[in-house]
Amino acid sequence: MGESTEQMQPKKAFGWAARDSSGVLSPFTFSRRATGEKDVTFKVLYCGICHSDLHFIKNEWEKDWASSYPLVPGHEIVGVVTEVGSKVEKFKVGDKVGVGCLVGSCHSCDNCANNLESYCPKMILTYGSIYYDGTTTYGGYSDIMVTDEHFVVSIPDNLPLDGGAPLLCAGITVYSPLKYFGLDKPGMHVGVVGLGGLGHLAVKFAKAMGVKATVISTSPNKKKEAIEHLGAHSFLVSRNQDELQAAMGTLDGIIDTVSASHPLLPLIGLLKTNGKLVLVGAPEKPLELPVFPLLMGRKIVAGSCTGGMKETQEMIDFAAKHNITTDIEVIPIDYVNIAMERLSRADVKYRFVIDIGNTLKSST
Image (cartoon, rainbow, N blue to C red; front, side, top):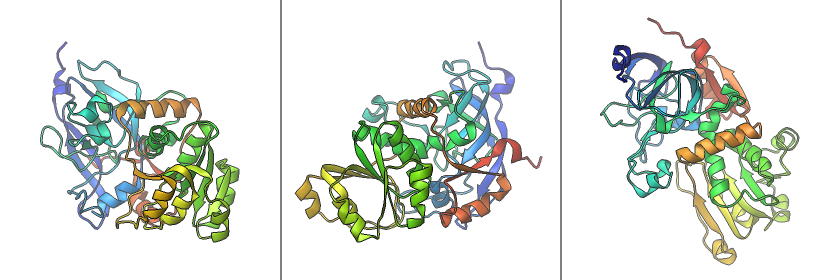
């Protein structure tokens, strides 16, 4: 069956964009490509605000990944399908769907062959990248998305769209290392450094896997929240030497979500022999890595990014099965600049989610 005339036309889109590295977002009208034969077009209902969005709009990762403007952020995107291409097999109009951090890859490298599209050298980010056709990709702070079905995730009916949106970045970013590094075995003991958007989800996923989670934070006032609300097994104040000393050599692994500069030595000390410290935060400046403690305990310091598409779908299904959602503050789109300013101060529990469907109104 051929495409309809309407499908063949580029689509008017409306969103909010940063025009320069001041990071101020304002209304922006642009075009989405016509729905291709393998594309899924969906109306965006919610989009989470990731810390990466803040880094990108301010071009703070210029050395590693320079921003290009105008930049429409957003890679925690959920909505409802409005149109599908003639060769789309997995989705139909009316389905609940999501798009995370990537919208393209080469499909021919070893990583792509092993369902690791997030490590493809030619990975195309959901925003701020150049797509196959030479156009710039725009993210989910917008009213519609047109995405190749390979990079679209199915959202189960019992997973709330608003609380489910941040799972597409924050959720998979902590789920993937727990699985890959074997820190998902019942009875294991895992540390989680930082109790923010990623950290609180790491605790929830670990618990659902039957793993004990200890939150490690600079803020003593987060102890009650960590243990009583999130169900963490224990809590360590990272500046309290007595607490750290008592917990030396007790953790099978640590998921470190902190994006600010911080010492790794105390964390390495908390690990058992063969323990794994996995970094998922991205500090702007290099961290100091003491080698001797690694040698003496055969310990590993590793990094992990997001997950591939197969694992992202697996994570979403796991979250739905175990009723894991993000703790969110839902905001209207015109609050987004205040939200960014608050996010820079870590003033959110634990993720802002923009109500795109009800608050993004086109000026046309």
